[in-house]
Image (cartoon, rainbow over all chains, first blue to last red; front, side, top):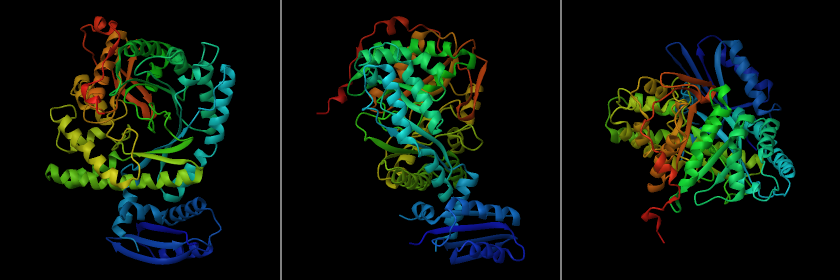
Amino acid sequence: MEKRAVITVVGRDSVGIIAQISTELSKNLVNILDITQSVLQDLFVMIMLVDMSKCDLRFTDFVEAMVDKGEEMGVKIHVMHEDIFNSMHRI
Amino acid sequence: MLNTFDILETIKMIDEEHLDIRTVTMGISLRDCASDSVNKVADKIYDKICRRAEKLVATCDDIAGEYGIPIINKRVSVTPVSFLCDSVESDDVIPLAHAMQRAAETVGINFIGGFSALVHKGFTLGDRRLIGAIPQALAETECVCSSVNVATTRAGINMDAVDEMGQIIKSTAFLSKEKDSIGCAKLVVFANAPEDNPFMAGAFHGFGEAECAINVGVSGPGVVLSAVERAGNCSLSELAEIIKRTAFKITRMGQLAANEASRRLGAEFGIVDLSLAPTPALGDSVARILEAMGLEVVGTHGSTAALAMLNDAVKKGGVMASSHVGGLSGAFIPVSEDAGMIEAAAACSLTLDKLEAMTAVCSVGLDMIAVPGETPASTISAIIADEIAIGTINNKTTAVRIIPVYGKGVGDSVSYGGLLGEAPIMPVHSGSSSSFIARGGRIPAPIHSQRN
């Protein structure tokens, strides 16, 4: 069964943001399903839809790992279950 | 793929606008806890709560982590304990409050509601025992919350109970005088009390409820405030639409959390409560929404109309977003827990009389109002009677949570910290109501209660 999460990354643009994050994801066996990215006035905004059904970590531990990674990189990372967005924004 | 704007909007609501699940409250039936020994009842209460709510906190923390929505409070409500006081041999029912306190500590929750009695038509022996024990119970425990329903639209108002509650509130204030009479912050007097309310201090698990149910209270005054501010100078029709849409989103999040919590905990999904519940935090105020709608300060003329519109729009948006709506469902206007209300009360632009008028169009009533410690019990009863009459006649829930702060008067203020906030002492009318209250008896049910 697919367990999908939305990862958002917001912060100042710099070299290798996507690379660092995708490395972290592959380390945890998290598959990227979709990715969208834009840079608005130096502000980097990336949104990923990922499948974490093969990820060994508990959801909350994975969230913590990604938030820590974000702090290390100087960007703000949110990882949230896809259902929260579906329920809030779709009828 | 989801819309980028929608995703960022949700994150902004949570990060910057204080969107949260205010409480996940597990309602637990205590109907199998009766015995003739008060200590046996206490043990049964403790065991039942601990067994049912064992995983409540951990499960809610997991849900909060996975969905990225803060769940601020995890709480328990139980069947009104007064019914367990009928069959015990002893008049002393304080051990039951201590059992609730111990259970709350064991399962790791911050409040437990249900040290309650429903006396809208009259008292049983158990009701009298419980009500008599309220002041001591609230002084000796921290997490236990108490409520007494003194009226319903169908039954009218039990004025003997209103009279007694004035005195009970005074005793509660006295017994917790070392902590600015904080006991009264855990005591609510109701008309038309809902049986599935997740919010403290008035939560209890009604007699018509399932064995175990999850009721969720969402909140988001900050989100509504931002939406109103962003709307700029539009008409009230447009503003109502904007508030409805915002309330819909907030409630959907609550519905999702409620579904997940009830599934994981093996409990019935009860209701989502659509209330806008403020906290003393900056930007989490209902008063500021009314001010953003165009009032210079809350409490001025127009406040009741603005609140009526806000309350109605929140309900309309929320109702469609949830499969079962219940509890109090409306905007709360607790004075001490809302930064804007505190400021307006301190500046005397918000008076007790205006608050009473505002409670006619919102939930829930005169909430967290600090008054002088020397206010007579009969005046407190009369304040209760007025508020309860509004609920009874208008077929809605109203409540009074009033704190006659021992040793303090107008010009002083009290600070309880945390969610309970701080409040300036508000003046009350000096004319006596004692002869009116002393009459006792019942105010008959209003004519429109005859619907059959």
